[in-house]
Image (cartoon, rainbow over all chains, first blue to last red; front, top):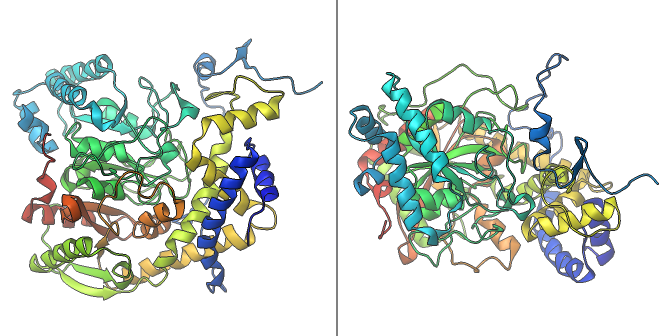
Length: 95
Length: 486
């Protein structure tokens, strides 16, 4: 399995990463090396084996749906690149 | 005073309790050492006034009659843990200057116990790396040999402790990022059972693997700090609930009857002779100290690297999607629209290793590939975990190397990501299984660089792990060696 330039651009778009053609080329080569290494797992017999996504097979803990103290809004906005009226400011999304 | 800098926590506590030294004086001692050794580039944010404020508070608590093994004790935190007073960058331009509104649970718990924060430690960007060559803020140097990498991703933690710029430091271990730098830098590094230390406030890399831990000069010191550091946290959805325990309780036990498993898979091709010699000598030492050795098999361990490099990047691609320049972190200065802003912010903020791993992760989770890659890797992961369960039916601890070689030189592996990934060969299996493991110094190899011995224990068996390590450290002095000039 070999990644093409188009593949890299497609993945970069999915990951919301800007990538130039030159970067894509270099990245494709490195990704192909990585995938060549990863391929080994395809040959392993995993019939009847359950996937392990949590080392202790833990389940998501739930809590009661009650209101808990909210963090201070000013604190949360402290690192905002741009803000206005207590809201995060971004380029216009809806025309 | 430099004798104090080379002291373990027990000795420091004794001096503090006797009033021979104050928390402020201890803080000043280490801050002075940090200032005199900037060349290691281990520190990302040091604020002496903040440190001294915490030290004064600890002295006040002591003056009021409070006692505790960590009261007034200095500690440094890997820059993966968010802290309110110091910047938290995860070693990345993406978070340059980021000031967290809260402290990580681990930081908070240790502060409550009276520990005094010396500052934030350099690391590979978003904890991705094995050499600390991936930090956006420069390489960390190995105090034993400045041409050598200290290991990663907790390179700053390892270097700082090795140079005795801090008596103990937090680290994180996702695929080996505490154990490997501990081995390369000649210090003791311990990764607890997954789920024991809280991940709240730990900037996330791979959620099913990330485990906070410690680097210090001895296993004993790690045990004492774990007593305050580990424990259930309702804010961490994967935190495990277990009765309180004393991690120092097995430090005095002897080794008779202890069965140590030696896995064939950890002694194959690729293991350098100098590392193998030091590790086998250490294992033989355990036999002389009363343990029995038994051959065990971890047949699926060699698949650890490919499994890890599917699972970890997949989880990272999800965790790092929060960095979009909207609410915090780097935002590009020029862009056409929101999507462009996000794409440029991410391209500018992330270095090459996070970019690589995000792309790998995005691919293996994408439509058409999820089954073949992520799901498949997760199944092989269970096989690896089951190997450990089976091995622990016939032994109490597993021993082996941490790395296949001593610390390599800067630049040696940086050009070839896959060869860098192979540095994690012996550490990822325990990470994937989630079992506790440590590295401790057991000698020196090629070019006088440190060698680490890895011990792995069964789930939740940290006390036995630390006890066995302590026994070795009572009979040997590798862990007390300090690099020349420090």
